[in-house]
Amino acid sequence: MFSFKNKFNPSFYKDWKFWFESILGFMILGFLIMQLLFGIWGILKVQIQLNGWIEAHPEASLEKILEHLQDKTIFERSSAVWVTVGMGYDSKGPVPMASGAIGSYIFYWFSFFTHLSNILVAVWLLLLAWCKIYPRNEYRFLNYNWSLVVLTFITLTSVVYISILAPAYFLDPKQRVEKLTVMSVFFGIALHVVFPWSFIAYQVFINPMKAQYSPKEYARRKLWGGPLILIIYTGFILIRGEVRYQDTSVGSTRFPYFFFNIHADNILGLPGWAWFVIAVILILTIYFSASNFYNYVIWKKEHKKPKNKIQEIQEIQKVQEDKEVVIIEE
Image 1 (cartoon, rainbow, N blue to C red):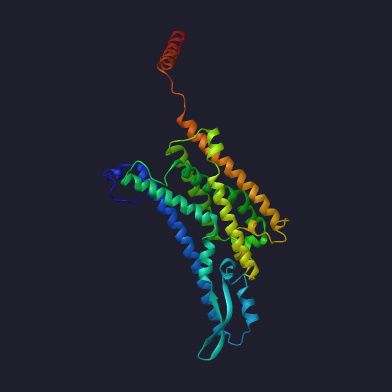
Image 2: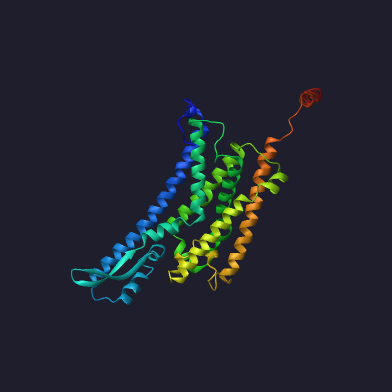
């Protein structure tokens, strides 16, 4: 795919689509990296501040240290949950020490479907841009089926955020404290609304790939690859969450989204398993609806019946006759 043996296109920079794809692709990756680094820095900041407080209060017990760590007026909860307090050793012997679980946080960060789908979009855009520098007839990944999968996945990311996650963050006090911060809103709007719908508009209406299936054929033959990926992702998240549940990890670090937490007793009046069922039904509905809709729009756009010459002549004559009538009336 990345072979430089392909014929080089020396005028690639004259194509505005190349710049749009490159800029949007790198912007998405840049925002993702910024978000990840911001999360890591938040954890390190809590760790440094807490260790400084421990040094200033050498007589504080572990219970007192944990109570201080849980003070929401001092530490941002979304970062503090990744800091643990245990016993370490220095020249004086065993001492309490705070430690940030950076590795676990990074693994947790990559479990978000939001991040995975945005990475997929960014890679897709950058590959499209690459194809304008070194064009070739076919690329294995850049085909029509994959284009619909990428489009539908990023649509899921946006619609689920708007319809389920954002309302829950505002309505549920616990979610609001741990998830709703200035930076989370900033990155949330960019990664769930701005970037996804910019890509969707571009890929469906401006730069669609050639449709390969009629709406009926697509629904019958080519619709099930994406749902299979979603099933694998869901299974991975549930297994990972169950493992962390069994080892008594902090609740908000077990699952990337609250509707995966099947052990929760009450989330906005419903048990966790009920939210899981609702989410599965909604996600599958969105997936099948969006995938079929995008295929229909692209196919319909390609198969518009062109006007024949007789129709064009008749329309021109009608316009001229209308003009003559207006002149005579005046």
